[in-house]
Length: 125
Image 1 (cartoon, rainbow, N blue to C red):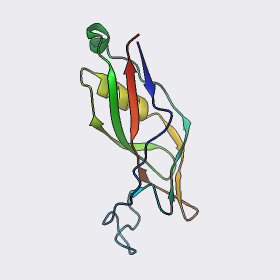
Image 2: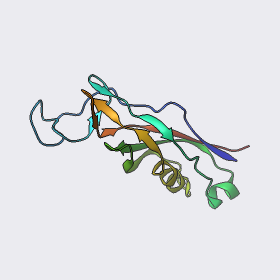
Image 3: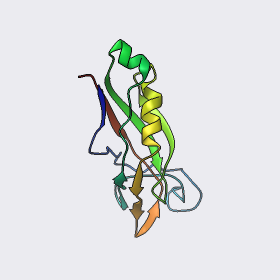
Image 4: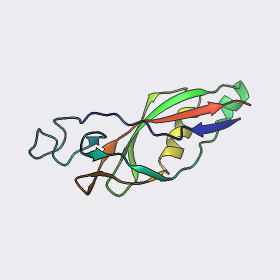
């Protein structure tokens, strides 16, 4: 049994308005979405999640969708599960994704915090 994180990080292609302070459509210094002037972060370090004991015993696997923010220093923050599997796999995926490191997303040559989606696949062999 193994877990595999999708090689391609899925990024939403629209900017969220009304986030953060400042001018320019209410986007300010808050969390951005990839697209337009915002260039996606680049993964530079990853750790594969482990199976939970419960999932291993029940032989349960499948696909999950994790939604973290990548901050201006390339660290993962604010991790949430969009589509989970339960029985300890959600926690194992979150634990692994929190350890990822990225080259930060960029907007007009400056690092910005972005929200992305990461597919995680737990496979039973």
